[in-house]
Length: 135
Image (cartoon, rainbow, N blue to C red; front, side, top):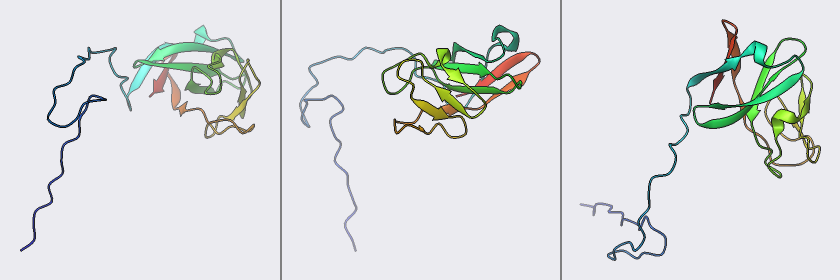
């Protein structure tokens, strides 16, 4: 007969030890983003051809771009390097360039072409004149 594996609970508040009460009380912050759901965040006509705009989709800030060929792309709103507003960046159908320090990211997978941390890209589609982003 083998002994049952028992895992010891760990404190959830930093600085507390097992068996001692937490000295800090945490208050609920903003609601957590809703993940894996589709969100209608705007009308396609709200974004001029060849430009991007920032929106909130399910509690997540996103930048949505309408390409000159009519395709749509979506990514996180802030550049991971220095928080630059990606919606103000330059883009083509393959790459987005951050307006602050010219870091470039591929639309296909969010990877940086200039060695920076990647960005998150989100599925986006048009439906009845609106665009729908899945975050």
